[in-house]
Amino acid sequence: MLSKPTFFAFIIVAFEALFILQQWRHPIFHFLLLSYFFFAIKTYFLKSKQPRPVYLVDFSCYKPPSKCKVPFSSFIHHASMIEAFDTESVEFMAKTLASSGLSQETYLPPALHCIPPKTHHRESINEAQMVLFPVMDELLSKTKLSPHDIDILIVNCSGFCPSPSLSSIIINKYSMKSDIKSYNLSGMGCSAGTIGVDLAQNLLKTHENKTAIVLSTEILSTGWYSGHEKPKLILNCVFRMGGAGILLSNKKQAENTSKYKLIHSLRTQRAYNDTAYYAVYREEDSRGILGVTFNKDLLQAVSETLRSHITLLGSQILPFTEQFFHVISILRKKLNDKSAEIYNPSFKTVVQHFCLPSSGKPLIREVAKGLNLNGRNIEPALMTLHRFGNQSSSSWWYELGYMEGKWRVKKGDKIWVLGLGTGIKCCSLVLECLRPIVEDDKKSPWSCCIQQYPIQV
Image 1 (cartoon, rainbow, N blue to C red):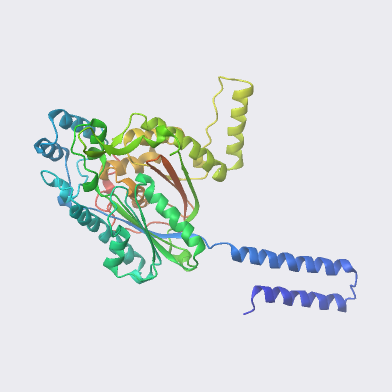
Image 2: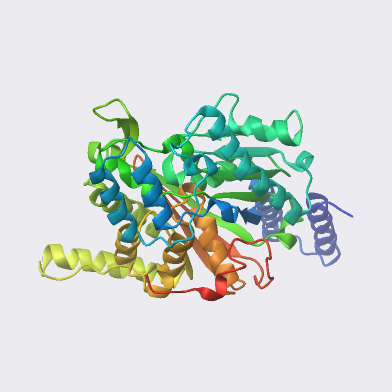
């Protein structure tokens, strides 16, 4: 088979021969022919230099064992037996749980079921292995790959950063190849899951014919707070066990087997702003006990961060009409009618499904308000929060699993995955579904309860 440059040259020779036979000797014919030739060659080489598309082949989510379930009554009973908590602290956690939007069937790791909770390094290692190994096993099984087929490994966990790293633990467990490119992300907050995918995408753009795995989790035994400061007690109440694995590839054959194609990504942050930087902050309390503080300015900082992020994303993916109406409404308000409302462009014109931060009901509803989303749009986030709690960087994949379990994702649909984490930082991924998602995944954490949802929360 001829290569494209050779084919173009063959066409040129054929047309030159035709011109000679037809006695078309005017220079314009030869000029046009050579112009076409150079244009075709330039187009070919420009196209050949473009990186191959990045595909999200499949993903897996961890479902903890039933023994790890923590009903509210058990949580409060255990908390009241822990000497580090006074009566006021226990009452505060009970009120927080009651209004959290969590169900009675969320999960905590075995170490936090002990009295007092075990927060030693060894317990955190055990928790990491308990979550990450099954996720990795399921993902390899789903995609029919072996550990030696993986070229890039990214593991993210915000609060636990052992040495050797979590990525090294995975490589050691699965005897992965010596030239694998491995990365360990820590301290990135809940947005680390989407940031890990963004990093994998950038690596796949510069390394051809490769496969990458991103593993996302949060180790709760490290983040447990045994003190009295209320802003730090929130983490104990809403964060729960979870983990996800995402397999991405830029191989040509992946187009036929993948669920999604990654068509856009965007990262922004406001760590330069003190209000955003200190909105969620890990620090010691007055007694020297380490914990994560959720400050009262959190929702304001989130709102400002989202506003700038969404404006930039909208300029890149929204249709011209939506952007035009938005700009006109701003000009009208500034130049003519100060009381006029600014038109809020609708992302639903380009996106059919939304995976939102499931950090809590107030945050989900705040994001929904800013994007003009309805109840069905935020349903996956609210139901994920209810069934599994705030799973930090892995929550979005449970939301996508919910939508798949409901058979809502159709071929050609776009999914917006919006990551939001400490800093505050934002990372958006826009996925396009490549095939109907109708298979019944028996290993999905939603498989045994999807028919019970949605419920009123």
